[in-house]
Image (cartoon, rainbow, N blue to C red; front, top):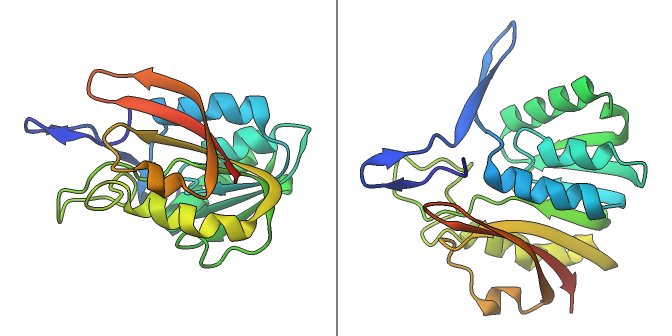
Length: 203
């Protein structure tokens, strides 16, 4: 399943709860078709220092950290529960020693520059008070991705690359990618949307 999609009176749940002995961590995005599409290219391509923006459950960050070619991974999410979920996934996979975990609204608390950035943004149009930041990217679905693309340049090495996934429901336009060369790596058609995975390099 992909990110929460509302229509015709139904919704695909976009998040899950992670339970430990002390508390339940709500609203952590559950890996879905978009996650696995992106992870395939993380395994294939990334190296050096990697920033996983919007880490969610940490699936991309852990995939990256498991690679010998990757020296360091910074896992970032605005949701502290997601950061904790990513930390637990990393510890379980035995790769936490290569990782840092940061609670941040996009680049607000992020330092440094990176060889690769990985971003599975909230990319669906919002519907109001019931929106979850794990899937709702703003009124058009593109607002969070636009903020990321605007600020990513300052944290990406000149030879760096961004891996990003989004949907044909996302309101991104060609002008949103004007600072980048765009290569479509993959796409996956589902019954309610088509997912795209792209590589973005500074132009």
